[in-house]
Length: 246
Ligand code: FPP
Image 1: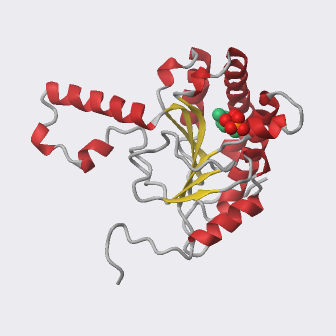
Image 2: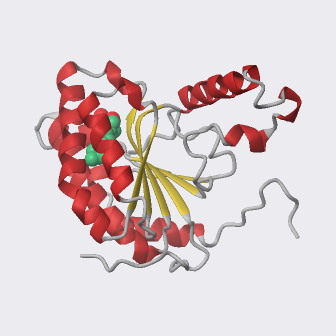
């Protein structure tokens, strides 16, 4: 069990504050064992728990994970239903542990397409952990970067129509306030497991200056040791955000 504590300092020297992960490879992991895809997703959920638990000691203050994309509805009905029931079970089971571990949970994505029972659990998890000051876990569920930008634009357009926002005042700073992630810092490091080198519509706006790590490890094999190694590697990078070297 984790100690609860405030995330006031980083414990990986020069390490990233905000890490975002595309947890890929559950299906291949299961296939390699002759098991159904959902077996891999369950193993992935157990791995996620371990990674979240490792965050405070690694100095990761924000962890954002891609659990279900706006494109994942195209999977078989069995897989989608299995994933939805896994999310419900996971939130229900882990809720008290999140509070005990001082972990603040948030969800991003279009939750209106999700089942009302799942939406209620998500709302409840956010409400119950809103006082927590430890690791910020953000779960992207029915999330797509383009969809997020489209939804943000729609809300902004409504505010313009209502006269709340002057179109001439719209700039990057105004726009980010309409994104699902408006309370989060941008990710410093985006990791994708399973050997695919693409970002699949994840945090498109927010990752403009992120560093990327694409690694071959399948998500259910992504251990805290592998995670720690990637974070240590990040510490030696020179991030200039478009500026020239000093
Ligand atoms: C991608 O692997 C994984 C997903 C679409 C689901 C991610 C979900 C989990 C890790 C379960 C735990 C999450 C929560 C929030 C409880 P894939 O199925 O595309 O793998 P493949 O590319 O090998 O087929």
